[in-house]
Length: 497
Ligand code: NAD
Image 1 (spheres, protein in one colour):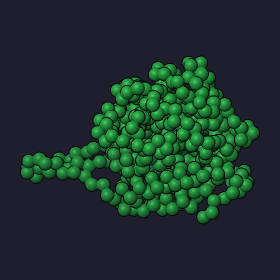
Image 2 (tube, helix red, strand yellow):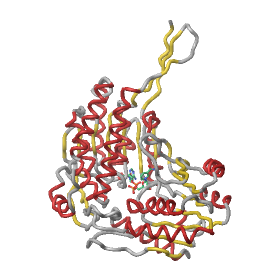
Image 3 (tube, rainbow, N blue to C red):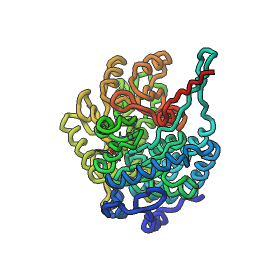
Image 4 (cartoon, helix red, strand yellow):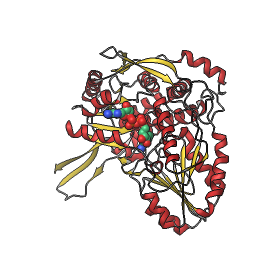
């Protein structure tokens, strides 16, 4: 299908928003309080819609619906082949509504429309398909015990799963959690971020159209401390899967401790280093991977490669090349299919990123590229690719997650120093290494403390590989078969013969 033009996307956006209520037990309903909140388009600062604002009472209703569907066994007891077929029908509907989903994602998050369509929606559909296809391929185990007994070990669904997700990749992260939780046979209550509630509502409606029984997937848009907190504290939620900031992730451990000791998995923040040795194999490839790896999605990626820790002998050449590549990632109208970088998600985050740029300058780092907001669409919150040099270990811009298109370069003179600085962070989501020496590649990859280490590449990954962090980047893993384990309880049945 031909990509619609900028004009066409702009015209469609006006009429796009059809679902703004909570989705509970297979129906769209108002919040019990009747309250709504404004959903704003970061492209131009204009109101998209007033969205129902779920809070504790609505979470109670959604959890009750999820629990009833679980207890009735309408999903968990359906034959695996039938569950697979149902999700595959849903995937077909996601493809059929791809442009609608993409436009909602772009309107909420400020992503370029091409990325929303070709990356976010495409990946969401692919992930759901992958999880669907797992459903009838998961086997249990028989334990090696004395011959007077048989013990089999199975994975059972946990019950009601609460999923609380952020705004940076709403459909992708939702598909990681909902796909794995449903594949395991659970029922789900999803709370999207307040910045990006719209795509989740259509995603859930399509599930119902595909035949997912009522109550198996519910969506409660609303704010963190109210709707998110209520889900985290709910006595009937058996597992809480969270993606978001490290600060908020820790609240969910507290909520679990204060309520029913529910299982909690956390996918949190990052400050991914690129360790660039003097013998890197291809400086152009590295520059391209570094630029796209931090400026893609306007830097709002948990594993964005925000720190370059580079051998002094190659720093200048590398950064000049990164700047050259970044010229093709300049902010533009999010409805223009040619745009490679969109907006920051909202004005609060925009102010925060600009504040960090000021902090960097006041700490003595030097702006090599960018640094000042631009306004390709009036009223929009756009920050261009920004590079700092002369960043020193321990500066705030080197330590803290900025979550914007800001790269900092730290110059080093040897590998030991590079690895020490790379690891000297509370985070451990990803790390990259650039070297042509195969034994150094192995040695240093082992030393880097991160859930994923890339060597001579960056951000290569897909649904088959686990994703998650070491240290304060979290616990638990999204993606791969390991993620499905995270939504199950291991059960042993021992039979005396
Ligand atoms: P956030 O932590 O502010 O919000 C995430 C979710 O938590 C939202 O749905 C929000 O409403 C909810 N929330 C906020 N405060 C809450 C509270 N007190 N109680 C309960 N729920 C609450 O994060 P964000 O700003 O939406 O997203 C950016 C963060 O997410 C970054 O730190 C980023 O690194 C992280 N992230 C991590 C991954 C990963 O897989 N590790 C992926 C994407 C984003």
